[in-house]
Amino acid sequence: MGQENSGIYIFCGIQTEANDEFGEIDIEGETRKLFTIDYKDAAIVAADVPMKIYHPNKDNLMMHQHAVSQVMKQNETVIPVSFGNVFQSKEDVAVLLENLYPQFEKLFPEIKGKMEVGLKVIGKKDWLEAQVSENSEIEKMAEAVRGKTEAASYYERIQLGGAAQKIFTSLRNEVKQDLFVPLKESAVAAKANEPIGEKMLLNAAFLIDRDKEEEFDEKVNKAHDNWKDKVEFNYSGPWPAYNFVNIRLTVENG
Image 1 (spheres, helix red, strand yellow):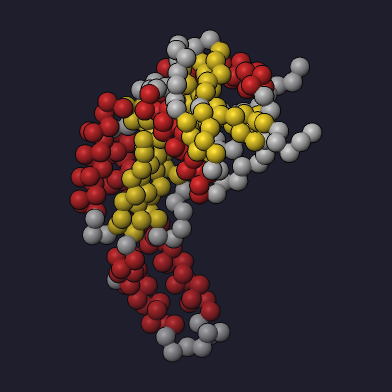
Image 2 (tube, one colour):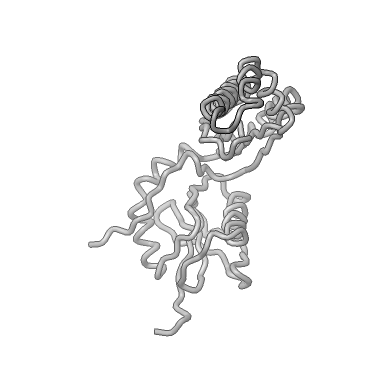
């Protein structure tokens, strides 16, 4: 067996009746044509690639996202597939699709004409520090720590950390109530994921109707106007429904 074994990299599932053309994609410096493997009214969008492990570095992740974005521009029912799935042959992918079809059939009406957008809300450093330092309980604790040796102030320091954590938790709750809850009402579905890092106050995903995208964007902009002195908004999309679809990619043997 030579080094250049060929594999099939899969990007997403779609609902389609046509033989769609989605153009080409650059994979690690090589131009590859996107094609579909079909079963009934479903298809998997794929490309021929060298058979190997694809590492989730920035370029590869961008490549995966770019391919899915190309598909989303032409198709309104896109089922996301996670990064890095390579199969040995088109036949294996066809078997996979046949096995997945009952799940796809249920998902198609749920995600048709829908897209995911992401909203991360990150507290501005100065504002977060002001929230902590303006708190009278923390001020008292900080006073108790001052001038003591580190060993003598050990428990106060732990309490100080705990009190600061409490403030962060309450800020996260405030942002959730004030930003996430009203936006959730305008979405088909919404999910608040665990914030990443100590300055993030909200890490949310929303599934919205494509034809209501503008309306939803306006709501996000209004929310941003109210909070812009305190936080940064990182608003992204459109994505396929990564946070709302859970497909297990297993080929059953036998």
